Image (cartoon, rainbow, N blue to C red; front, top):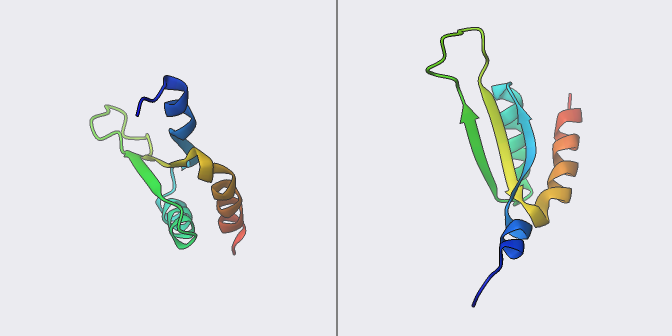
Length: 81
């Protein structure tokens, strides 16, 4: 079964959340997992940087077909007290 580049683009990962707070990262990730949305996470900790001021960065990606639902879940998770 052949696939085109356009098919790959439709199914590729989409950024659902990005930030530098590890607590919010965990909160968002747990909410997406509770909703059974598969995720792929990245953490960019700048371990080799010369500037110690920089904060780590986190990103959570989801499948394109899950993006709309994931965005709703992220918004709801961030509204929690």
